[in-house]
Length: 436
Image (cartoon, rainbow, N blue to C red):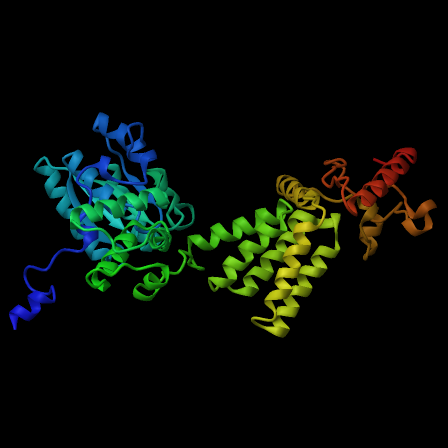
């Protein structure tokens, strides 16, 4: 029976996974992160001085974050301790901290590597602060999520964020070549299939090696897979996009900027990417409404109507029919004249309102519902605009202590060109009639 297990690769002599066997033994062997570990890389410079502070390693899966953390501990003679935020709680953290204090007393410092650090809640993240500050541990956290959204500001202020990039095709190809060297055999793939395998990895080095192992396991003696054969023996991985995490923010940002940049083709591409990945269509509808408000505004007031109509159409039709309404709205807002004048004006007005929020409006424009208020001059001298020439009195509506402000400055595009003419006309009348 043991012979059967060994033949199946399940006995004591079972080979370690290819990704583990190919784990770099020094930083120079890490592929795809030259900006960090190359001759002039950030980490290379740190190690030259043997001065390592706490770090947050941010990047997609399979880009070498865990490997680099291990190599940093080795290069700086620190004890390497690893925990995962998924499986650890407060009791585990206390135990790790106590062990680190004990090592410190004996002259050994600790590099504490925390995988998926964003999974810890705010209180758990705060527990790292004292041991970071007193030097008990050098914290190296790894996360696939944007630290700005997921980590406490206090923790971020004590650690440097290093960005790991998705592996490009050249880096993945290097990994596959190294795998062939270690295995002593070539991947049984045509050139086209090899390119397809690199693309299937989607920038994930660990995934590329797992796929390579699957190809070797599936191949019969002398068999070579083309693209179609490769697709049959390995399941194509879905794109790295989690609608609840960082890919969500990246793609919605790209969609918004394509709309703002008046590029309907790029906007449709990102809309299709998000819908294909399972993003909520109603979330997309809300964002399109926001784009109509923020980036178009009164340059084309119809944009908001179209965006809202698309949301209603999706509510009525559902998927997939209703998705076309979202596509129509995206094309409309992308090709509409652009203006952020209302957006800018509102932010400026909010800023002034917060600074002078206690200023009282002029009594002349306030109602006088009581005799006392009327006696105090409330409403006295108010001029009803409809009774004035051109239906415009030109009186001051700002608090007297504040003076007249100019927040809204329409652009010379779309309908705002007409609005600007009106504002210029009223400004001239106000000046002629002695208004402020």
